[in-house]
Image (tube, rainbow, N blue to C red; front, side, top):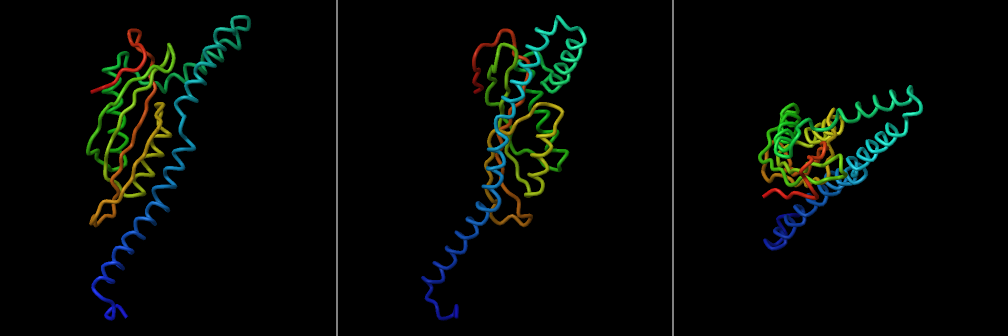
Length: 196
C-alpha cells in the first residue's frame, strides 16, 4: 500500500509519525512530570512557614518548659535541612555540590550547572535557586527527582523542562531542572540578589 503513495504523501506520513511521537512523549512523559511538579511546588515555602511556626512556638513556650524543650528540638530538626554555609557565596558552592552529588549517585553527569539567585524568604531564611542541565533516561530522571525530594537538605524542584534527544540509542531525555535550597539568611543580604 505504501508503494502506491506519492513521494509527497510519504513525506507527509513521516511528518505525521514524528508529530505523533512528540505528542506521545509530551502526553505520557513530560506533562505527567510537569503535573507532579506543579502539585509539589511551593515545598520550600511550606517548609519555611513550618520553620516560622516552630520559632513562634519557641518564643511563646517560655511558660511551659517541657513544651519549650520539645519545640526547640523540633525547630533544630527542621533547621538541620538548611544549607550549612553562612554566606551566599559559600551557599552557592554548597548548592552546586549537593545537586551534583545527587546526580552522580544516580549515575548522571551534569552538562551545566549555574546558580541563578539568592532570595530572602524572611528575615531568618533565604532560598538559593539554580539551574542544572543533564541527559537522562526516564527512570534515572525519576530517581533523581525522588532523591531531591527525600534529601536530608530542604531541596525543592521549581521547574522542569524535558525534551527527547534525537537519535540517542539510550533513549535519553535532555533535562533542565531549576532547584531551590533553603539556608539561613545572610545578615548583610537584603531582598533578591541576582547572579550574573
